[in-house]
Image (cartoon, rainbow, N blue to C red; front, side, top):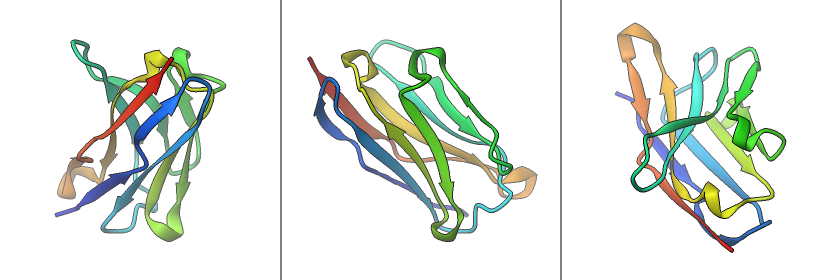
Length: 117
């Protein structure tokens, strides 16, 4: 069993920044893949950013150049740095880590991000 604890959401004005964190209860070294998703009211959950253990990243077009996903292996944490936030970034954000066929796939509890105009 693995626990993922998210933190860092909140209310911010447009143009502001937030950093989301997803702390795992066990090592995330060599875990593939890891990602941040978001779900806005009435919309499907979408991938925002993903990263491999080798450091390869990918981003949704809507967040490229504004968001950065990165790993802190020493703290078993995946972060999402969000800059130049826009009202359309408002959503519940979830982290997702795949610990493989034995341990399985896990989601964080979700953290609300609200960007006011």
